[in-house]
Image (cartoon, rainbow, N blue to C red; front, top):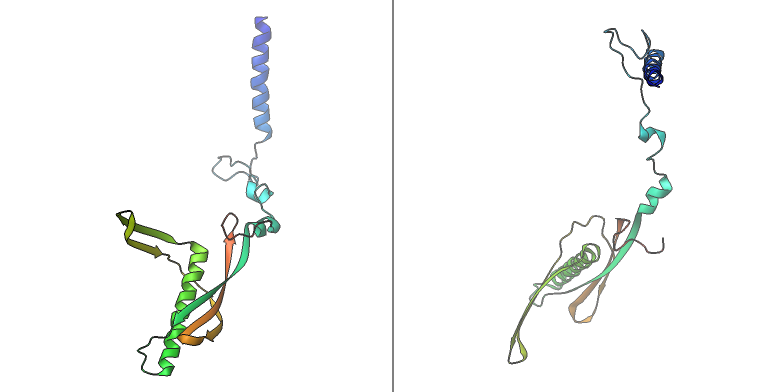
Length: 171
């Protein structure tokens, strides 16, 4: 029984040696001039297609969404001329439109403070803040309403990733 174990171990090591000799490459593409054997090139997993995503999978992860906003502004009463009032009213409406687009894309941070006195609201402060860099927002139409009010219709196209609140549902 002992001889059988020794024979199996010797046979195992001989197979390992001969299997190693069969893969040696003397002077071929897998060897260099220093005599040190280079391992054969292995195709990377990325090239083999294991991690490649199809264009359809990538398209599903992103979507182009068009957002619309209506900005409103008012012409100042102390404008020097009617022209200045129009320009300032349109500018205020456009700034309000940018704020509304930024709020749709990034949300709004709201901080409020309320002080109660005698069971009634004595003092209240609400602070709203949003911050964004908007590129490509377009003014579609200006309107001048009565009482010096201006409206601007704006839109912007944004690319959103899957999982973003603006990503189209049911797609």
